[in-house]
Image 1: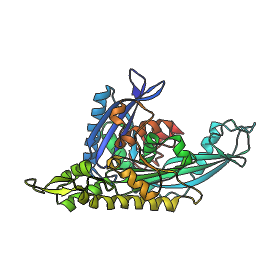
Image 2: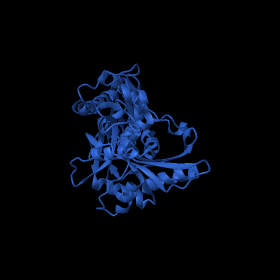
Image 3: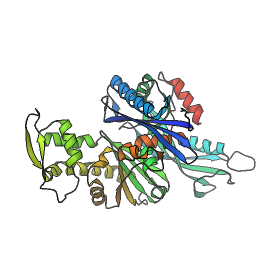
Image 4: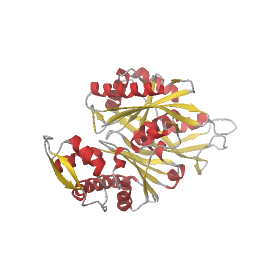
Length: 407
């Protein structure tokens, strides 16, 4: 974070499978204003996991340079989004005795009980990156959102705990550091996307967010105001593009263009409309209609929904009923995908775009910017967005700094 002519600036870095995005925001009395955005192609990741350090570093450098040029602000620290199958989640409960003589809950008691909830078995190759308080209980009275100032002798908390693989996190931090940046915090990407796109009412009544990126689909389920399940599916929009390329016998780049221009998840009145498809050598074209394209796209969309539904059904308590599906990420641009989701899940569905921000809203009010914008909204809150390092990597000092900053 740094200072601009407006106020404190905050930067988020979304290192995706298909693109890397940097967003710079500045604090104002009304909230956050976006003052800079930068994008660059990602060539060093596969399904959210880094496969080429140098390519990833170059993508980070290119995206942050563009954001700096637009904002006129030097970026030094960034909130970094992470995703991938290595990220896992569970729910746990912590209990402590209220420590003060007057039996009034203090901030320190809240920190202590959240720390107590982190006492779970975590493999030597994993780290806790989030411990999100869902609700508190004071002397048996549950459903408390903020217990500070309340009187009692026993404080309990229900938390949603997210862990990630040490190796993956170390490689991400290494790329960020080599790009000349320092991580201000680490955020599991669906939490960031949720912060940018979900309304408080949706979090309370029950909502599932599907963030469909290029290589992965992130899932986050909220009810009662807090997260109860988060996960990552190793399938995203790129698999649709691959299927189109194979089915229409064309290049990946041509298939991506076709998907964006003519692709649809539902049947429509334009099924007979034809469009040209370049051959693999690019020298000739042939005609294909949109109904043929939909026959390729729709089954893959249904597969993504099926995988998401299976995870949600397995992890959702029986007494929890969802009221809505929100789709975001670049995959949410597919025509009719919200209608397809409504039919598949049997719930109202909408496409989520970043809200509750000012500044360059036209530039970021798109589903593919949900994670990057969410990083600057979620990160500074300190809702568990920390790197609890065990000092097993060259980033031990950064790990300790994060602990001092947030704990």
